[in-house]
Length: 407
Ligand code: HEM
Image (cartoon, rainbow, N blue to C red):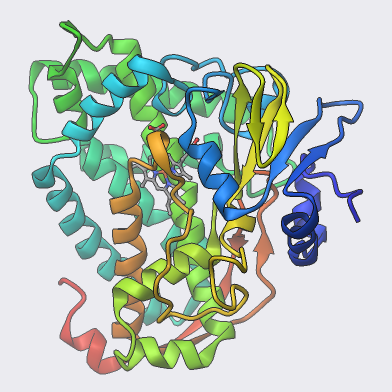
């Protein structure tokens, strides 16, 4: 059973790994995943408490050599020390504090309103249309709206940004060309260079303008670092929230009794949102590199070895979650690790929650029910987990649609 290759994206398409994770949690809490011809070996940490401990310890376990399998196995991350997720130490703390200030309650409130209005409009249109691909037509539009509102991207630039983001980041298709992805990444970086220049001249109430004004130990943030960190917000917030929203529709279609509870208002939107986030766990794993010899999950890890933590397993840990394999919108407490933990805890957690919550609210307002019209197509990735295409038919709630989709 341990002949599973966790570095191979196809593993996650071909296998149900429920028993595999149960076995690792029970018997191999620190499992040495062997190298193969193409990649080095790495530690696999699967229990909730151990995953948390790794997330917490950025003294011994650094993100600077990469925080996802692809870059860790390739030997490093080119944005190290510049992009927040792959920066550690005092620079991480300073940059994170500046970014946190840029996410002011006023800015977040503006973004929240934009997400609500737009989500309601997009979902209402989709439901009126009767059927389509929820992943492509709804769920991929909402993160773009969120990031654009957060960064202050003008409305007219949003379609371009959306198409570049899709090509640069999407792991939907197994045969995606690396050259197209590279070109799209350059378009994004070029676009943000121009936008940063514009915002330096004419600041508004958005994250780029706030970062452009900010100082790190007496020095302004360079244009390059600013652009990199705009990009890191897109990377962090695009596919993750999209996958959570798509998973919500798929899972609710498989659990009609939970859908009824939601629709009839018998569970709160807040607890439903948390369960959707736990259940979907869009980012399956993260990784670190040991700076020194260090004990992890009772195991001696040597300096320079790669340690991966599997949120997908931690979120099903039976010692923390009662009946972890039951989808229960009323689950409480629900301290999932979907957004990570500790010094790198997701900067966009508030917005990720807002997106999922608004989709759930729009679904229950505008539709009486829905059903997939074909098998969903899974994503091809060793990092992200979820559904790339979800053809679905919606039954409209005419009264809900008439009452309010923000028009
Ligand atoms: C960090 C998950 C939405 C921006 C993280 C981490 C996780 C995560 C697990 C920790 C990574 C690590 O420890 O190495 C998610 C999920 C989301 C989501 C599941 C949606 C459901 C967002 C959004 C944004 C965002 C909407 C931006 C607006 C970031 C950034 C970091 C981060 C910048 C790095 C923080 C740091 O290193 O200090 N995210 N995220 N995320 N996320 Fe998210």
